[in-house]
Amino acid sequence: MRSFEENLDLYARLAIQVGLHLREGQRLSVSAPLQSVEYVRRLVREAYAAGAYDVHVDWRDDQVSLTRYEMAPDAALEDVPSWAVERFETLVAQRAAHLSVAAPTPNLFQGVDPARLAKATRANRQATRKASEERLAKTNWLIISPATRQWAAQVYPDEPGEEGVAHLWETIFHLCRLDLEDPIAAWRQHIDDLRRRADFLNRHAFRRLRYAGPGTDLTVELPARHHWQTAEMPDEAGTPYVANIPTEEAFTAPQRDGVNGTVRASMPLNYNGVTVENIRLELRHGEIVRYDADRGKEALRSIIESDEGSRRLGEIALVSQESPIARSGRLFYNTLYDENASCHIAIGAAVPFCIEGGTGMSDEQLLAEGANRSMTHVDFMIGSDELDVIGEGADGEEVPLLRKGRWAF
Image 1: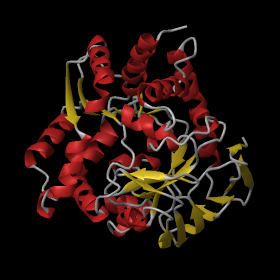
Image 2 (image 1 turned 180 degrees about the vertical axis):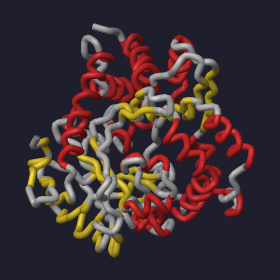
Image 3 (image 1 turned 90 degrees about the horizontal axis):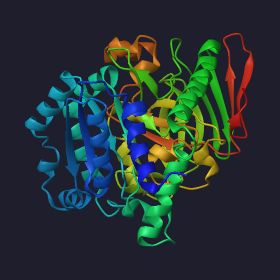
């Protein structure tokens, strides 16, 4: 049985070797909160051991961010420094790998005006949009989450201090398959299994999916050239990497004007440090015409009303209730984990590579193919053990995809 320290090193190795698949001589940019410092130091060591040319860590402090959102002038929230944009663009131009360490402090911004949060988020996305899309299409990137005291306090509220942190680490190790004899080999097998699911969906070329569950009666048409994708994808050089650890999904883009019906979230959403509970949407011809939430409605409003495309969907993802995260029965208040416990949909932009040849297309071309465009992309969870999903082929053949939340193929 491996020690905690050995598992921690293995978790860093998994990120560098399987997640990023870092190439020898490649630069690495790491974005991380201060509370993850011990894990990040391991990431840096593993990166250099894998042959990294240089590793730069961009630290952030949640409390400093909170103070800024509470006290900075409105104009400052929309002022994205040109040097920050240039630095990001330079890293993308150098084809640096990017590793985002997501260690949330749930409800950190619960008392902040959602309009101020939305203003800052929108300004940053607008300033970095071109480079962000280039990074998405051409470089290797990864999101991963280490345990922190702030996150553990939300997930295990009855276990104070280090006890909760230790429990969260144990859970992460299990959900990321680090408790298996050969975790790296287990991950490669898992990715192969997901790829086979996506291949099945692509072979059938469904024209629409139908969702039925508590509060959900939704029909989703699919673009003619839609492509089902997993978190494994190639960078510009053709080197495969895995963008999310953990990952349990197969996903694609819906037809932007072809979604009709009602849908209800099955889990709370933690968005910009605000918890949004019991999201409910009604869509007609792809547009969200009504929306509500029991808590955090203003945050939901800031998502849906952020731009012209944010009233439509950009992603649908299938996840089985048999995933280790779903079987844990735990709400993580962290979309990286929660979205891999449940089928989910995303408000906002479609990912270009969910359209055949989409990574080389302009916004106008993607729109013509049926893919939504927006500055926003926010996932929320709709899956449960009561959700059924059926695929309908061009010839009208119906194929069960999920029965009671579990794979039916």
